[in-house]
Image 1 (cartoon, rainbow, N blue to C red):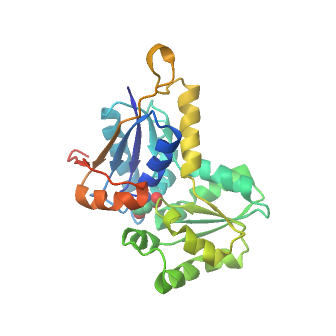
Image 2: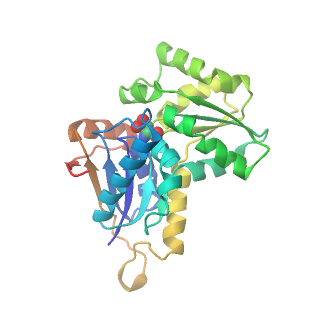
Image 3: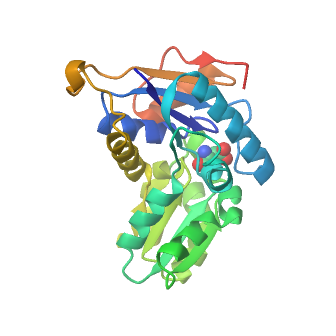
Length: 270
Ligand code: DGL
């Protein structure tokens, strides 16, 4: 049975895998985390595009039927350029998040936070404006959030004061909806909500991405089926590959995936 391929710059894409497993429990998943070259958030467009193509070529060798780009930076920089290079459907995390944000916002002031690469690419802004030309978009890069999450700093005075600093322009602009445009940011949701106030809607695109994957597999008749075309009742198999340091990846998996991971394989050919 073919698998769903997912890639990210490192461990953060496991938040998307968690949702895929929840919504598509019978599907096989192959995950690749580019831990040798993380972070992507501070790299140039050309480099992120090159890494993304290499990651996709690796996944295609694993016999995947659809590719999900779980990394926001790769989705912002690479997806618009590469999505037509390959025959397999390729889904990113930007469009599903944008759709949900435009739907949720009442006052049409939408905030976007992400890595420097994601924010500088202006992909979120462009897509929001395409869907709602009247929307006002206020963006902010939050480069300290990824190390905070990876170090397990999810609350406390230091975190609170950094979050306050980064989110000030969004708060001042009176946004009523904020897209958490980075794989790691959903883990900082409580402190972000505390700073922005309980009425601001926080959009974590993982759920919408998994819905989109399900829709495409279903419309292209690619869902995992049992004998005679019946739905498969066997739980899907999940494989995890990284380009470096499988121990580090396994150690952080619990935080992002909600369970421990054994058997993370290191590959050298990416
Ligand atoms: N996965 C990246 C993203 O969602 C965050 C980590 C990195 O900078 O590579 O943008």
